[in-house]
Image (tube, rainbow, N blue to C red; front, top):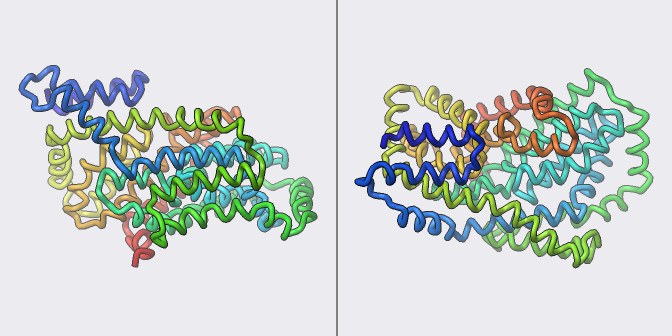
Length: 430
């Protein structure tokens, strides 16, 4: 069976809304079913699935998922927002900017884009709309800024890329700091321009900010201290060498549990089983996708797909600049129709030979791939962040995507910078 037929069946299954894990599994077994001489059978595929899940770095993913849910239930996102609203509230677009900065900090806790949108958006969208901001604007800000959750470390997609490529996860985390901050600044720039053009209800905003100021800075900081401390502890453990990313994820779970139970007292012991069930429901689909994508990537490797694709691109496009543009367009299209985890696990082995042939650093390519797929979080038809924000605000997904388009354009501008200026990703590594 040809590669084209396998990929066509896979795409057709996705179009028919067959779950990604099942689509990957069906596409993986097709060559052995229709070609008895194919070297891979069902037993090999099952072993490949289990071996793909037998990974120490992979343990970080369910831990960060659980940690993110614990912190959302524990009200950490609200306390983060109060701090940034205290300092930014009196400026033009101060509260929308506070939402963006909160997403940056929450992304440094949860490592997940959808989790960031859910935790921050569920709290900030009602606040912004009550202060006179348009509902679609408030929801689109939360959806797009939530994409920073997969760029700012710790990042679940960076862990996946490290698994697929062999790159250092710690170095990937470090490389994501500057790109995440740059994108955050671009989103803040857009929010300021938007609010200057459309205006703000200064009276309502003033009352909200004055209520925070009446508490006093020390009170606000005291209430938010442990929320602000959480990313410092998590990232500090990684970068000082005290803990690996996986161990830091476990630390984040215990930290968020202790803060929620005993310090903020926003979580009760009775709620813990429900939180565990929610985290399992969140991670279980990822687990099935991981297993199936591992088998699918093995099949593609045996069918020499990485060599075929890399040879075609290199022979068709001779300029490294054009090659990088083609790869970016390809990843953007993939991000629109496929979730981040299977996209990284499937495409990394295919694209690595091309990247190596043009001499690009592996860490820089990891940043480029994750930023591309982060854009996919806010582009239909998959656009997970859009669906989360839509469920929180009841704004249709297509309306949200139209409202988010200027911010997506800024995301693309940043992507070009990271692609052609390696220093943005690699300078912090020395």
